[in-house]
Amino acid sequence: MTLTTLDLAILGCYVLGLMLLAYWVSRDERGQQKDTNDYFLAGHSLPWWAIGASLIAANISAEQIIGMSGSGYAIGLAIASYEWMAAISLIIVGKYFLPIFLKRQIYTMPQFLQQRFDNRVRTTLALFWIAVYVLVNLTAVLWLGALAVNAVTGLALFESMLLLALLSLAYSLYGGLKAVAFTDIIQVVLLVAGGLFLSYLTLQQIGDGQGVHAGLERLMQQAPDKFQMILTKDNPHYVSLPGLSVLIGGLWVINLSYWGFNQYIIQRALAAKDLAEAQKGIVFAAFLKLLMPIIVVLPGIAAVLILPDLAKPDEAYPQLMNLMPSGIKGLIFAALVAAILSSLASMTNSVATIFTMDIYRQLKPAASQQHYVKTGRWVSVFALALALITAKPLLGDFDQAFQYIQEFTGFFTPGIVVLFLLGMFWSRTTANAALAAAIGSAVLSLLAKTFWPELPFMDRVGLVFLSCLLLAVVVSLSERQPAPATAVQLSDINFATQPSFNYAAVAVTLVVASFYYAWW
Image (cartoon, rainbow, N blue to C red; front, side):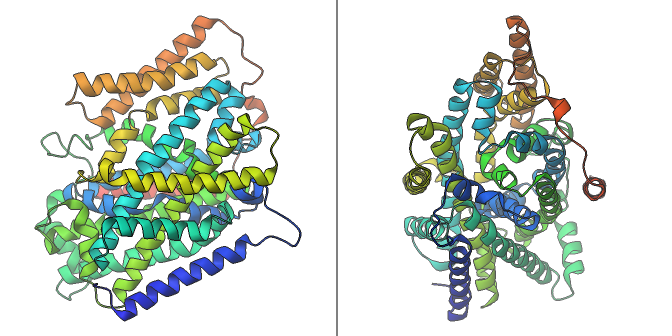
């Protein structure tokens, strides 16, 4: 054990506070039981600050903190493009996607696909998302979280995963999304405070006590190759972040898919009181996103000087934590555990939502609301159990788990973005065209991976997206059908946003542009 009594006390206070808050916000009024709206969408009661905090807490987890710190160690600041470009993507989602989704009053993304296309599209994508959430996302969070717990406490990997799974169920299983979203406020405060403090201490160490600015200057002088936002072709990591394609290519597809059409992310916005509240939450999340590279990437870059001989890049963040003094280590470890638990709870709740509302309810349409809630809870338990069993076989041999996740999901992301964008903004799109895009994405990605292996995966995502877009348009036009009655009537959607949203959008864009200008 490398945690002191003080560290354990801090961690214990966090866990206890989390459980108490979750119980308090989840309690039922006398004589009332949770229905599906309460359990899966928090009764449409989430305020903007809970939405924004929960978006970031769901997003930033072990695969982000451990994985992106590892990529920062191996690649450098260029990996921050995922974070900074995501801030602009969030603005796009809030402005153009949320008005459509909230107008449709949906629970899930597959439900929108049924409303717009047909049940084939809904079921196909529902099964896909369940598989990805369980076998890619949940496994990654558990595995990388266990690596961190093992590095700090010495607890064996499987026992670490089991502990994290049980803790996430303990505070989220009963209360559902409301418990997850409101406890995420604590998670984000801990995450931001602990992450910033770790970055501060590492830069202080590099600066030999002369301050953070001196530490940053020394880091940039001694590791200049780690401060290039746009990688050149001679860079060994160009295949992961291929130059200007980061700004104009496949990263947009990846981000729009993740922030706009990803159930366990967008579910928070679907649970908002109203559209304006959801858009405020989106803006809040965008500003928090600008901070994330300081929290998750900078420590990895600093580890290049502090821990130059790591066996694997993903060891950077856990090993840095071990260098921290007593008390501070407990705080930073609690922040990491907070991020892990939040993402686990968010993912299991979304798996339960999709399975219950998009698959199980079709099989038992006459069941009671409480039956569906109970089913969702059992699905959450089963999903975590399956992830526990498969985590090590799937991820045990990867040095940079974050890149593995991006590579795998990149097979399907282009088709998902095509069918949603066309489904929302082109009324002639048919259900067959949507299926063609979804299936074509996997087929074309596999062919490109097999016969053009040197093509960077981000470029592959962009090219497959364009190919699937063309395929969907051709299929739709060849069917020669009029716009269906289920098409989105854009004339009924109000895309106007409040002045505060518009000012924030400009501010986020200018900040991101300044980052690229500074480290081009």
